[in-house]
Amino acid sequence: MSRIADYTGKSPLRKKSKINSCREAMFGERARKWAFIFIVSFLGCLTIKDVVDLVIEYCEEPKQSDMNMVFNDSMTMPNVTFCMSKKQAWSHFKINESAPVDEWDMIVDEALDNMTEHDSFMTNTWDYRLVMEAYDMIATLNSLERETTAHGSARSIHIFRVSPRLAEKRKTFKKWMDVLKSRNVTFEEFTQKTGTEVLRRSMQRFQRTTFNEDLVIKTKLRTSWISQMQICFQPWFDQDNFYPIEDQGNFFTMLLSHNAENLDGEHLECMSVDFHGRPSSLNRFMEGKGRSRDGFTFELCAGQRHEVSVEIRALYQMLENDEPGTSCRDVEDGEDTEFDCRSRCRMNMIREMCSCTPLSLSYLANDDLDEYPLCDYTQCEIDVQKGNYSDTECVNGCFRNCRQIRYELDHEVQGKMVRPDLTLINLNWGSFEYLTMEQQWKYSITAFIAALGGSIGMWLGLSILSLIQLSGVSDIRDLALTSPPITTTKKLSIGANPFENPFGALSHMATYEEAPPPGYSRNPNPTKTQMN
Image 1 (cartoon, one colour):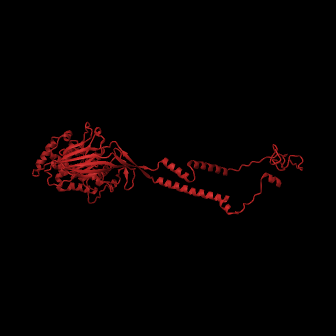
Image 2 (image 1 turned 45 degrees about the vertical axis):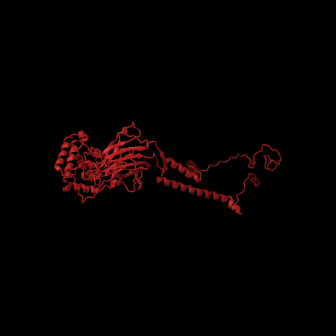
């Protein structure tokens, strides 16, 4: 039987021998096994760390910025706003302070009687007394409703209603309200007409210019702000007259005149120009802290020739966010700008106080003037002692535009004009190239999956597909472990020889060296050994 065991190749189990040398301890089978386990575990930990860091970074919604240099063939006409002091705008009005008040009122009433319809009111030329009275009414309303804090607005409305010294102003206010209502004139139309009548006496040239002599661009004037301090206006173009700037150099010219005799000895503030198109200087003070004060100059003094060169320094396109200092929103067509959003907050506050719509903010009203009619502040009773009025909560929801343009200005004074009553302002465009910086999300869904696959395959060479395959193999292995073992047995016939040669019959014997070792043959005599 021992010989049969030798021929079958099976040997009795023996315990592993002890480690007998340093080489076997360092490079033996056991050392290689533990080294493999350590390396796989270490690389697995690195993989898990990278995956966790990647998921955390993705959840934080990281951003990245792309910077490019743009070279344009033309530039879009910027939204330019000019502001002039009230004193300079009124320099053409010769006021006779010794004239009786009744004479003034009679001339104004007679002029209004000749303009009983909407069209005549908007097209006829106004007497300067009519212009000054209308200007003062609009400026007073802006002071009450917009040029102060929320609580200051409530206090000003209360004083306007109860103060005895403002009785004549309340009477004038009531008269003009009836005039606008009877002629079906909106407050916005009233503002534009008043601004045009004030500026037409000063405006000598207000023209968009090009180097194409055959092209004539019709330039309109739009009044953006009227207050007790200044009047602001903008060039306005319809769709057929809005052309891009295609050449470097002069693209806009404004020539103004003023009455030097009426301003003799008076301190006159210089004019300003703003290329961001903000309606007035109030916008700059309404903006949050840390805003850039670019694209603006206030040194356009009367009686001089000014050359203002402008070019875009950079264009920033940020992603919408609520982070302090960079919070912004994308402003689509028909949506409120930051200034209009703040103005709408003030309108809603006055509506809550007086249940009416403030006139200077009526352009923001939708179709709810029936519910909130135009304000008559003589009927608005406000308790400023007990009430604490604020629009801060609403204003906190107003954000800047995510698209920001930074301008670079160069202002030069070319000396005094030949005529001291004239002021010339030339706007020139500089370079057509500028820097752009656009924010983008660092990870999209596909980029995140690709980065995740790279982190998995960096240390262990795995992939998402291999993980899916491994999960499938583990499922099959679990199924195999839970299934009962399958055993196969070979059936022996009754006449089979239990001592049959385990190597089977040999097909041929070539030489003596190739002969198998001695074994039992199929000889009927089992006790006889046959040697080949």
